[in-house]
Structures are given as C-alpha cells and as structure tokens.
Image (spheres, rainbow, N blue to C red):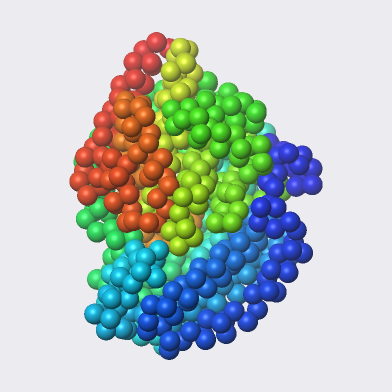
Length: 597
C-alpha cells in the first residue's frame, strides 16, 4: 500500500482548519496576545473570597482556557498532519509550555476557594451571580477533602510537563524511533512494516504474512522493552504518589473520582466480563474452525473470517454508508453529518509522517475535526462512523451548553461513537443476503465485542494490577509487567489460543496506559451504546429524543446520571448483561450463517 507525501493528497481530502485559525501566522498572533495572562491569573490570588470576584475570575478563566484550547488544538492537528514538520512540532511545544505556565499560575484558585469556611462557601455557591457555574462549584466542593494547600497545588501543577514526559517518551519511541524488519508473504514477497501498517497486515488472509508481521513487530518491541517498562513505571509511580498525597485510597480511586464514579462500577465491569468469558471462547472456537487451522495463534485473531471482508469501498461510498446508517437518529442528525463532509471536517487519507490511527478533536469555537487514515476497508468505514459519532457529540454539546459545561467526560465519550458503529453494521446486515458477506459483517460486530469489551476490560485489569503492585512496593520491571499481561491473555482468550512468547510484550504498544484508568470507559461505553442502540431501534422517537438530549448535556451533570437519562444504569450489571445477550445473538447468527457456506 503506497503512502503519499502530504503535498500529493488532493485538497478535498484534507481538513479545513480555518474555523480555528486561517493560517499559522494568525496562530502566532493569537499566541503572542496571550503573553502576560499569568499575571492576570495571579492578580486574583488572595481575593477569591466572595461571589462577585469568583464570578469575574471564572469568566476570565474559561475565556483564556478557550483561547488556549484553540491554540493547542490547531497545533496538535497540524502536528498530526506530518510529525516530521519542525514548525508544527515547535508550535505544539510552545503552546503546551504556555498552557502549563498559565495553569501553574492559576493553580491557587481551586484550593483558595476550597479553603473558605464551609458555610461561607455554600452561601457563595448558592449566590445568583454564580447560578451558571453552580454545578461546577458543587462538584469542586465534593473534592474539597482531596485538595492540597494553594502552595502545594502550585508545586504539583508546575511539574505538569515533567509528569507528561513518560508518555511523551513512549509515544516518541513508538512513532519515530522504532524500526522493523521487512516481512514476507506466502509467495516470498517482502514488504516494509511500520507502526501504522501492523494491524493492516494482521487483518490479511495470508497467514504467512500475518505471522511474519507479528514476529517482526514484537521482535522490535522486545528490543526496547526495558525502555517502555521504565517509562510506564514512572507514569504509574507518579499517579500512585499523587493519590497518596491527596488522601485517596488508590490511584484508581483518584482517577474515577474525577467523574464521581464509584470503584464498584469498575469492579462490576471486570466481574461481569469474567462471567461471560465463555462467549469469548466460543467466538475463538468459531474463528479457529473458519480459518481451518490446527492451532489458533495471536496472529490469527484479526484475520478475516470470510473473503467478503476484503471488499473495498471508496471514500464517497463510505460517506453514503455512514449517512444511511445514522438515519434512525433523524434528519437533523443526518444533515450535520453531511455538513461535516461538505465543510471538510475530515482529514481522510494517510500520508508520510502522518500520525497513526484516528481521532476526533475540536474546540468550543471551532467545528469538530476527524483525523483518520482511510484505506477503503470496512474497518475504515466503521472508523469514519465511529469518529463522526464523537464529532456530533461534540457539536451538539457545544451547541447546547455554555463553555464551562462543553467538555463531556471520558466516561461517556465512547457512547456516541459506538452507537454509530453498531448502527452501521445493523444497516448493512439488514441488506445482506450473501452468506460470506454476512459473515464478514458479523465478524465486524464480533470484533467490536472482542476488541472493545473483552480486550479493553483486560487492559483495565492489567492497569489495576500494575498500580496495585506499585502501591504495595512491588517491582514494575519488564519481566513482572510482561508476566501479568501474559496471564491475563491466558485468562481472557482461554485454551483455544496458543500463547506465543511475543504476546507478553503487547502491553508496551498500548498508549492508553499512560492515561491511567481510561481504557475501561471503552467497555462501559460499548455496553451502554448497545443498550441505547437497541432502545432506539425498538422504541423509536422517544428513545431518539432521550439520546439526542444525552448528547447535548456535556458535563452539566455527572456521567452516570447522564447515562441514566439515556436509559442506562451502570450501577447494576443489567446493561452489561444486555450487551452480552446481543453478543449471543450475533454468535448464533454467525453459526447459522456458517452452515450456509
């Protein structure tokens, strides 16, 4: 697969960043205009003891934060276009530094407000001047016992860049410094291997190529495993230390507390998935049978189950497929998706130096943006639907909420994207009569459960164990981390899978581990999305209305409450069990479809 230089990509397939800044020069002008804002922040220090001053400070704070967000987002998007671009790298570095400087200068505010006498603070929160900030202030008050003194908060904030260093080292190592041996297909032809092409090769129907890519990929990771372990150990110990300083029982409790999520939700997810591991084993047995292999290896778990899965789509076809898929969400939703395509919210194709993967990003002042590396596969179409879900969630939130409630939490972030993915597969299944094509679509659904519910929960359990080990003073060297990971692979994949020695190094390639206790929200988001999607298809407009209202809530309520508004209660196992009921239906369909081949 030839990857072009960015200059060779047609303009219509590149995003239009002018809703942020018209040019790099305009970005520079805005950056220059923010010099001195640290002093503005410090001018409020020692004065946040009344409703009027707190109101003025919050207006300034959200205004400057929005400006910083615009600058940061633009630089980040430009950096993603070509990570070799030194100017974009400089922009990213400079805005990150300014963000840390202003955040450090503002670090006094939270503890200063929380240092007020309880009765006085409660009265301030109830003041009419602050009615638009009331929920935010009530949430701030909830964390009072974990807030340090103003001086201590400033010290911690000043280490922002240092705390992020472990993640940046790991990312740079993965994206820029790792080199892989060429790989060989079944006919002896050689191909270059890169970080971005690895999964593509793992999805090949050529088993020799898959195995070659697998061995080459993890050979390189093994060579650098001590560096990855050092970086991850630093990240974990930083989180554990901060949690202890703030008086939390664990780093996991600290992370979940930000969204008012009880530990029981995390534990319940792991326990529920453990109860349904038999369905994962059943899926792997189907996979082994269809691939006609004596042994199922890790390099077989992404292989297509049907030749129909090799079907290619143009980007224009992908756009139409996404538009048709979201039709149950109503005409207004569809119009916004069409607007995203027309106004070039999407950066479509891969180019040399472009960041791997896909994401949605944007700010309160801009339209959302989607970065992807479209390759014409069904998976790429699904990725487009997925990221469009994120972008429409952002758009609806920004359209209905003030800036202080426009940043919805990570806990609900994967719901909209997964609803779109599942609607796409449902739409395609309804119109599919060919057994091989149907099996390919069912495999896409099954991959969603495997990759999003089972694997992300496995990742969540790995994180939990790693942080517990650090908290208990145990070693977090490459051997201990790899042993924990290998044992989880054995548990989650069962006896159907042959455990290749390379498998234990996979943890090193998961960048999400550097954002502690984030990955579990993929699994809770997926199970929530299944419940919501099924409700939309069965209940119609009433469920659509609840869902669109949910997408418009931003951070104006706690995420568990927002999901309850959409009809999902994650404090019980009901919605998770409903997701596994759907998985059983898909497995039944797959087994019946296999009989028709």
